[in-house]
Image (cartoon, rainbow, N blue to C red):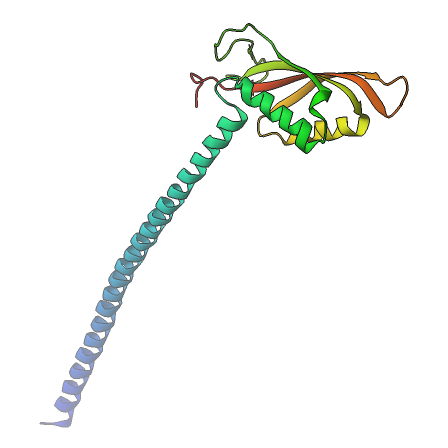
Length: 197
């Protein structure tokens, strides 16, 4: 074989080698791109599954939170008047928490008739839809001004929502730090059973 033919064969083999290498690189790049895309899809699926699992865990804890919230709402906005509980709460608040003698409470009176209706005496709230206001009054007598402040502070801590609309005081004629009589106009609130949850 002559040198010229040998040279041509070598060029041809070199060209084929380069073409094979370029083909291998092209096919390898294509293969790696395809596998990279598949891996990205798998990672995205995994992330989506992790997200679903976390949402499930979160929703189960949210369900517990919702149950606790429902209990709290039923305490602050019961579906009926619960007059007995209100009276007991105020007697306890006055005597134990605010340090007033029981004899200082002269009356606790409620609006409405004596029917055992859960909403008798309650008025539909103008400012909060589906909530009823339930007005009542408390009369106190012969207490120091500081004890009145303690009593009002304890009303704020009551588990039910209670607002004081009006206070009428008659100061003591003999001791300026004492109050002879006090009339408190208050409101508590109800969320009737038929109201939207």
